[in-house]
Length: 408
Image (cartoon, rainbow, N blue to C red):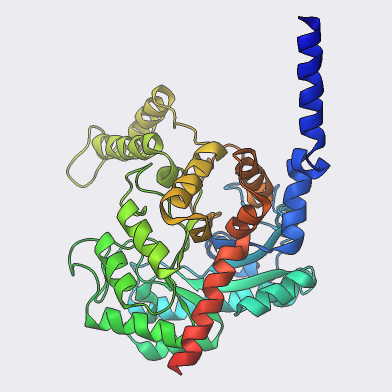
């Protein structure tokens, strides 16, 4: 028996010695991958968070360390970006879809200006990027390539000249709509997808070399855009609908269309997108708020906000929010990869855009390496992790640039 054990131990030792040491050290493997391939996040709302919370201070405040600010915590600052080994970031220039169109345009221009201001203030950290080559140059120089994503079709105010102006200012993608049905694209069945003008927007995005972003849109709009677009599309921050049946996540049927299109789904970290249990809890919490106080006519404690707040606090203590984990985010990545292929998945965190708490293990921008290490633990090779981290979206960007060149 002892001889069998000894032979087994020897065999195990020989098996381990057959692998290089880095194969057993996920931290070293992740660092090795990210030295060669920039880690690119498809969506971060830091500019909008700064505008909303800091007002005019956003133009001058020190952004190197925001981990100790009072009130709502920030997920992003320069120190934590460096710790997270981020190589490229699409900064979302989101404005509320409830605003009049021209106000949306004005505030979008302010947000673009803020991104450029941050880059100018910290040139040792950031570099503006518009193309895949720009991203690679910034990464080689040790800087974070800073790209711009316009997160709502309402922000062009129904005007292709405005879209072209955003492109001239460096915008790299347009989300076709956000949380509202607009005149030419829908997040519900109103238009049954894109109108003729909506299809024209997609073609113009192709011509401009801007990516078509299908996060937040209805499935009909997803399908229409995929049918029209000559370039690969992205979902800048979406999950797999088979895991969590959130209407903003991507169905298996659409995942197959994305694969055929050559696009990429960048999996996000928003708890309600990741976890069905969390999504249902959020719906119950919203219903409870309405039940307690929904002026002007309904609610148990209508006109008594203190009583309503106390009752809601008691409800929260009895019904704590289900926590979401890094592993559940990894499950979405695996599902997208299984249906569409590992060449068609990326990362789109939605940091500073979804409140708190965030998934355990993915609390801020310092945590990306932990997610990549988890994929390695699940058997992903270094090349596959490099694609997830940034290689896949770089391929999409390059192809979109080729389509634009051909169309022009």
